[in-house]
Image (tube, rainbow, N blue to C red; front, side, top):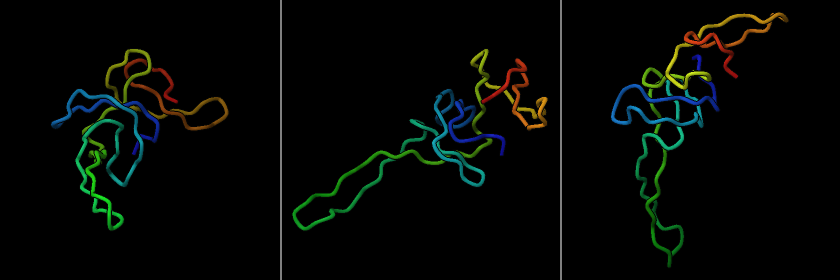
Length: 101
């Protein structure tokens, strides 16, 4: 997978199409994006006199439904790999040829 935690992405397919956010967590072939694909989760009471609660959590999205944002144009782009002068592998935007951190 070419995406990493902390990358700024945009959703390109599905019910949340057009939403932007940072990747919080990467799974095998899915990613969890901050503020996108929100779901309600019902929690049971933790003690005898308490009440349960409903919380909102981010659900995973398949990696094919998100695209990384180009650092220069702020539009969705694909990633290619290249090597810097020290031989380290780096990610580069295909649209603007800018390095992606």
